[in-house]
Length: 350
Length: 275
Image 1 (cartoon, rainbow over the protein chains, first blue to last red):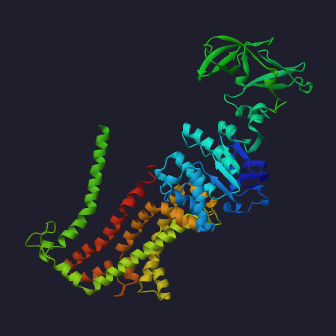
Image 2 (cartoon, helix red, strand yellow):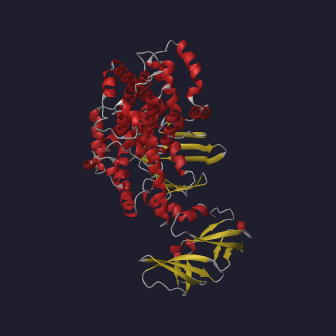
Image 3 (cartoon, rainbow over the protein chains, first blue to last red):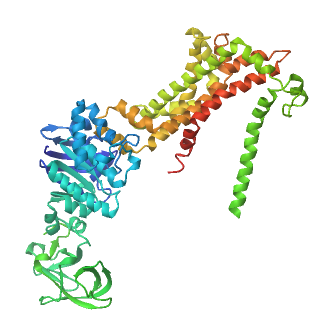
């Protein structure tokens, strides 16, 4: 168990700057999820922490040691890979014990750890099987088991669920959550799936183009996104974004939605964001928004209404319950002022 | 229909090629069981009751030196194969996995070895062996054959190594496995089909080689089987029965080695093509 901190970390391959000035402090026992679109540098960051790639500048410390120049094994980390990366010619037990033998642990200690991990992950009956005789979910459990037996200070997960099918992904996700409470270990988890990020994380780090866009608890990111990128990335369907002009201390969109803004923004172009789930049909707003239903996606209890405003802007609203409107219906919508998000011309939250 | 035609045509070519390759060998084996007169009289006929004879085999197997020749061939071939595979795999791993100063230059240097035949250097090799006092030793042959086999082995094996998923090496590194153990315990077992392929490609030319044994190890104790057979071919009289019988016998070890490796070989040759 240990805290981990990154200080002004950057990484370049040749002239391509993959990571720029990353600083982050992770507390002991915290579950941090790095999330972002593909190519944002999240996996590279994980590889730097693991010690698989050298850093270009900045420092990484685990516990009280700076680990920049240490080999992966000396950093006391364990990593779980997307492809599982099990040794194909070794059985489950050998996969878990392979690294431990080189650590010079006594045989009793090794078998104690394997027993404990395989009990935790229900692998007892699989110990003599080869990876090719295991299902995807079982392979992933073995990969996690191989990490657990190392008793590392920090667990690193690189998109561990993305090779599993949908239902297995949900159950393995729950299992990971349970494992974190059980082990109380520091965990860093990379994913591009915002549902995984929201459900697993104590804290989410949203990355984009090699930078950290925002760090916060799942609900902070949801309710107070720091900028347009985070606003668009967290939440599904995406937050609706409307351009507006500030006049007389209020941002006004082309279709007449208005939100109060502080006076310093007078005359500027800003963006108003509204999450689909925050539209209220009918409501008591004095200036309801008129919109026409163009398409309805029924998901069961919830339907997504794709609508167009009188001025041509497109938006998505969520409808709860049965009797969803039909295509062509005209609705009047309103939004609670507290559910409006405002962003300045640079996309930063006002 | 079109496809059927194409498949038929391809098969015709393959059958023709196989016949061209196999018939001479068949002819050698067939004639080795015939009396001398029949070898020349009806070379294409199968041995019949009148023409059947084992005289060649009796002579060859009765020759005390044949055992020595076989032992020389086998030991030179197998030791060369082992060194080519060991050093080839290690060099391929180094070139595929590590970036170091001059690694590209080294890879280029080794690939030149594929293009330039080692026989071009025969004279300097002979000089070198004389200086090193290695003429008429099996070691001379082993050294030359190792040099001859390495470039191709490295080329093929580094292709295979680069196909092994990166994550596997990274996982081993995170596990704290030393680099040498990553190679021998993680990478090498996965290279088995490639190693079988390289083994066959290495063995066959060594076993069949006449040039270097003639040049470097013509002594009676160090002759290989291909060279040893030549003693039945005289300037004026050639003992064809013995030559053909010796050739037939000499095919057997290569055939056995090929059969051992063939399953692995096929999976090795197709590994890149079919995921």
